[in-house]
Each structure stands twice: as structure tokens, then as C-alpha cells.
Length: 431
Image 1 (cartoon, helix red, strand yellow):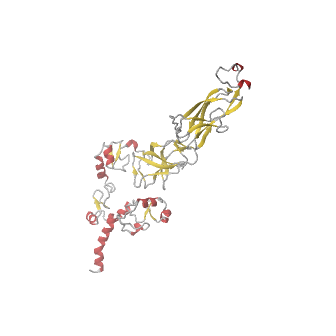
Image 2 (cartoon, helix red, strand yellow):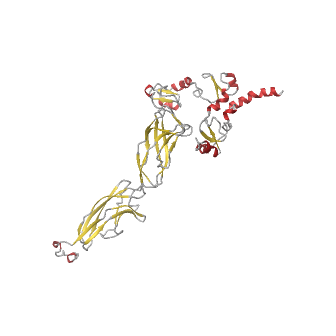
Image 3 (cartoon, one colour):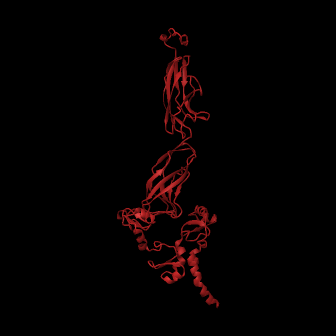
């Protein structure tokens, strides 16, 4: 066989092979891309994730040894095919050379869709091939059945009680009263957020937002949940790779956050955002929710009932109420108690500690009233009454009770009579 005839013999086979693998025939289609790899090449999820960190940044992608695909504005491991990179136009380019020719399309190993008179890579869906009527027909079998529609991978529009191909606009679905909705919009649905965290603590929250716009949110189009304050160590919550949230559907973003290192109260509030060239914030914000960054052990003074004048040697009752403003619950078994101050651990009034009851469990925000009977010093004068919380053997913590000056006075003359028989009386009358 002469060379010319041999070339003519092999050319159709080479074109068919290129079409089946999704490789571009036109060299101009891949001038700025890596060569299309076989679809059978396995790329680890870790490798995909690492390269995707440079989505939207050509230079960083190249510097990391990844391949940047302009058709999808994404960065993938080298060797990723156009189809796996989301570059369906380039992937289909080889097959499209047979548009309008059913026999040639089939012979090349591509799939021919009569409804669009076009030839696509095998595996292309009716919807992706532009056969909207056929695509919708399958979904419409679930009209009036939300669960059936969802299970079939279609989009159910409550406004029309019908099931459509995902991507169908609200207007196309017959939701005429919603035709004027903006392309991007969102509504807050719910969130799970703690009230208290420790300084520097890692914790998890969830925020659910509903797509109330006319266009789907997709990972590839840089739709995110965002926080412009960057208070919690994370600025974005991401959709899953390849995920799209269509109009009327909701997405729950699970966020792994880190609390600030400084105790205090900080606001938690997030909103949907589209990053990229046409970046912008949109839709409802989640409710502004305060989160208190607190110490493990902390206490606040609430109130006290303390006499300011007592008789020397007499017994008297006093109480001090403290609130648990720390993260740990106070229990007697854990050694939480109230101790004297001014000076610390003094026994001026006969007691250096007031203990919790065995059954007490004072959680964050709870209060405890410590009530005790004390004995006044035997010597008249002025004395300081002040207390503070501690965990025995660990640390003193929290606010001090306000210092109260107690004046100890001599007994009145009426109390200086004879000592009752059989009792030992203090000699306070002689002071």
C-alpha cells in the first residue's frame, strides 16, 4: 500500500480514537492547556483538593506544578482530562465534527442525539445535549411528588407543583410571580451556634441557607458562604466539589472554626458571596449571634447580705451570691468553694471556706448563694469581710465580693449580768 493510501486508511481511525477519549482534534483548542489524559487515569481526591487551592490564580497554579484550565477557571493535577476539569465544550469538540451525520458519529464511537442533530461524547445526558423536551419529560413523571422528583435528580418547583430539569429557571417553570427574582439571592434558614467557647478552642457550627435566586450556586462558579470579619479563623464555607444548589434548594454549610484567644463577646454572622471576576455579597445575612469566649474558670459577684455592726463574740449570719461565668460547672466533688480574702485565707470570722452542697451543680450562667453562720471577733474594732471563688488545689478565680467593713462593738450593759449557771461566758463586759 502506497504512503498516501496508507494515511487515508488510518486517518478515520485516529479521529475516532480522539473522539472517544475526549481529546481535542484542533490543536488550537489546547494551546494553553495540558494534553487531555485518558479518562481512566485515576487522580486522588487529595491531589485535586491541593490544586484547587489555586483556583482563579494562574500563576500560583503553575508554580505549584498543577494545570490551569481557563475554560473552567480551575486548577487541577496535571493529566486531568478536559471532561474531568469541567471543560465540556473542549471535551465534545472532537465528536462535534460529526454533527448532522448520524452514521459517522456512531462510527466514531460518539453518541448522536436526534433531538439536537448533534454528536456528543458518550455519557452526555439528554439535558446536556440540549434536548430539553425529552429531558423534562422524564422529570414530569414526578409532578406533584416532591420526594420522587428529588430522588430522580430533578428540581421541584412548589410554585407550579411541577418537576423540571435542574437548571430550569423559575419563569420557565411557570412561576410567573417569581420571574423578577434576582439572579443571586438567598434566605437564611437555620443555624447551630454555641453560646460559649474557650479561648483558642476549635469548634464546629452549621449554617443553612436557601437559594432564592434565579441561578444555581455551584462550586465551579465560586459560590461560597462568607464572613468578612474573619473573627473565627475562617472566611469561607465551601460547597462540595461538583455540587450545585439549584433555586428553591437549601445548603447546610458545616464550618470548623477557631475562637479568638482573648476572652470577650464576639458576633457571629455570615452571608452568601460569589467570589471571582464578578464577585459580590448577596441575600440575607444570618442573625447576628453573640458568642462569649470565656475562661474555663470564672465568676462574677451578684449580691451579698452582710451586717455592718455585730457584737463582740456573737454569732451572725451572712450570705454571698456568685455567678458562674466560666465554661466549667462548679461541683463540690471538683473542689469549687468560696474562700476568704483581705487577707487571703483569713479566719477573722471563724470560717475560711464556704462549701457547695454535695448535690450542687452550678453550670455556666447559674448562680450559687453561699450562706453561713459566722462568729464575731472577741475584740471590738473594724474588720474586713470579703470573699472569692476558688478550685481547691488549682487556683483562685473570678471577681471578689465587695469588701464590707464590719464594726465589732462591746455588748450592751444589759448583757453584762450574771453568767447563767453552768455556762462559760466571755469577758466582753470587761473590755
